[in-house]
Length: 153
Image (cartoon, rainbow, N blue to C red; front, side, top):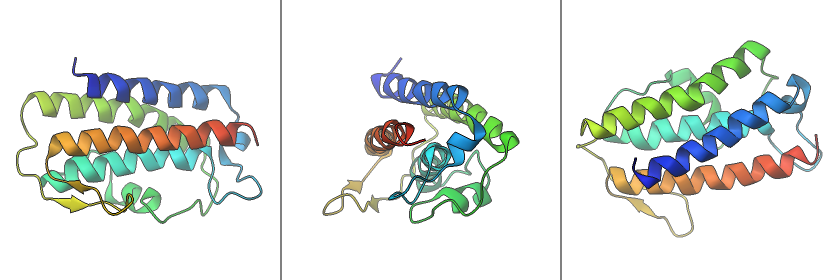
C-alpha cells in the first residue's frame, strides 16, 4: 500500500482509539481557552479530506454537503454531538479512507482543480498527490490538537 495511505490509516486509527476511550461528555467538552473539542477536530479532518480530495477533483464527496459545511475550516462546535453522531463519525473515519484508496487505485482523481491553501503563504494543491500529502499534514496537525485536548477533558 502507498505510504501516503498508510500514514492516513495510522492517524485515523488513533482517532478511532480516542473516540473509543472517551465519554460523550469528554468528546464534546470545549476546554477553557479553546474554541473546539475532540469530536469537532476528528470530524473536521473527514470534511477537509472530502473537500480537498473529492470536491477539488470534481467528484461527489462521500459525506453530505451538510457534514462538510458543519465541520469545514472556520467553523466551531455549535451544539454537542450525540452518541449516534459520534458512531457515524467513527465509521466515516475508515469508510471514507477505504473508498479514497479504492478510487485512487482506479485513477478516478484525474481532473484536479488547483487550490491555494491557507497554509503559510498559501501552499498550492496542484494534483491529487499534493492533496493527499497536504491532507496527511493537516490530519497530523489535528491529531496533535486532539492529544492536547485529551489533557483538558
